Structure formats: structure tokens, C-alpha cells
Length: 384
Image: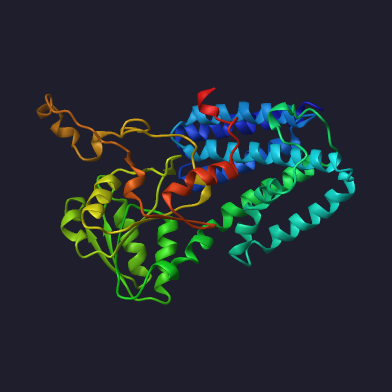
């Protein structure tokens, strides 16, 4: 009977990996949410005696998930966030012990405080900021533990699991509220009578524009994003929200850019140098915007923050089927035709003006600082 929960967890892991490989779970948000819930179940029901054992288990799971879908960067990001949570909660208990505090008594207060934060997250956009600064504030205090490299994470604390579970719940709450937290900043960045250009289909961008449309009157030009034509979905959604919307082809981007005040886009991932891995066609849009001195604003959640580097268009990319734009009946005439259908574009950080995240706006040069606040340098899963 003791092995039953472990077998159930293994089945859940195998099932999720199968869904990732078959791409029945798609979209950064859905994949991130499912990954976080899977790891929460593993922390809750898994068999581990100390933080080191748990860290090893989560790393093993993370590598399996990443191998199942290497270009879903959010999987590795969520795994690294959970590993960071485990390390920081352990260090908090260790600090309390060094300072002569009773971890059992203090943790009851921490649990009550954390629960209050979690319950209030939907009532204030600032709750995410307070929550995400939780660990960085601890590090600013006088820390009796200076060198974390010497810590083996093997000491046991009775309330460690509860503390880790609370923090993972906060992470899931952050994911649930990120679209609203980003959208609430729209009024600060979109002004009346502006013309906005966007590309592809991003829920974050849609809600951002719809929120601004409640108090501002502006126009939106949507690039249709061939061959997927995702931009058409965005144009229809914005039009239903009574936003003045114009749909254009990808080839018309440069011609229309001179009329645009601001470009607002989503992204698949934010790389360590502040660059983007985004929908194919984004690089063309960004170059046109830079030529016309139009600022590019990227709306994204922190869960897309990735500690990896992309050096060119081929570092992280995938190629789709040419069947999206070439008819099968024409195959006999295409013997000498080479066709490429890249899924993503890499956009260098110098083409991006501002990131709007669920904890506020940041310049591309500030991304390195956010990486230090949310990830541990030892958790580079892809290189191990």
C-alpha cells in the first residue's frame, strides 16, 4: 500500500509526458499550469525524506518533461521555480534554527501569513509584487548562512513540506492572476487616439488591449501571421470588444508601420539576454518598428523568463509542415523547390523597448536581475 501513491504519481507523469509529445496540451500557460500542478502533487504525495532528496526527484522529473517537449521553455522555467522554492524554504528553516527560533511555532505563523497572501492575490495586483519579493527580502537581511555551496540540504524539518506546498500554491496563484495583473497596467501605456500594431494570437495581449479599451479610444492593426493566420482570431476577438481593428497581411507590415505609435506583442519565451523567442514573423515586425523608431512593448508573465541564450534564428527553432501553404496536388511540380516553415523567430534585445510583466515594467537589460531573483544557478537542467 505504501507504493500505491508512488505508482499513481508515475502514471500521472507518464500521462503528462504523452500529452506533451502528442501536443494535446499546448500553449505556454496551459503547459505551465499543468507542470506546476504535477510538481505540487509530487511534493505532496511523493516519498522524500529531506530537501536534497526532493531536489533530486524534481530535477529528474524536469529533465523528462523537457526532453518530451524541448521547445516548451516554460516547462523548465516552472521546474526551476519549484527548485528555487525548495532551496529557499529550506534555507529559511536553517536560518531560523541558527538564530535560535522554533521552526514549528514560527511556521504556523508563516502558514497563516502565506494563506492570507494567497487568498488576497485576486483582490490586488500588488499582491504578486509582494509575493515575488518574498525571498529577495529575506536575502537582504543579515544572513548567518553566507556560502550556500557548503549546504547539503540533508537536514530534516517537520514543517518543510507544508512550507514548500504553500509556496507552490502561491506560484499557481501567480499563474492564475498574471493576465489580469498585466492587463491592469494597460492604461499607463496606451493613450487615446493611438494606433497600435500587434501580431499573432496572445491571450495576454488581447486582455491588455481590451482593458485599455474600457477607458481609451484607439485603433489596432493586426498582422494576420501567415501561414497559421492566428492574427485573424485576434482581429475577430478585438472587433467583438468594439475596438477599431484593421487586419493586414504580413507583407504590408513595413508599409503600415509609419502610421503606428506603438507595437504590442506577446512572446513564447524571454531569453536570458532579454531577447525573444516569438511567433514567426515577429523579427520582421521588430526590424520594421526599429527603422521607423516605433517602440516595441512585450506583454508576458514571469513564467516565460528563461535562463538560456539564443544566438541566432536556428538556436531554438522548429520547422512546420509546408503543407500549410503548398497544396499536395502541386507536389509533382515542386521537385526542385526547397520550402521552409519556421515556427519561431529570435528577436534580439536591442529591438525590444519594454517588458510588461505581472510585477511591472522592465527594460531588457534588467532581465538578468530577475533571473537571479527567481532561479538558482545550479538548476540549468538542459546542460546536465
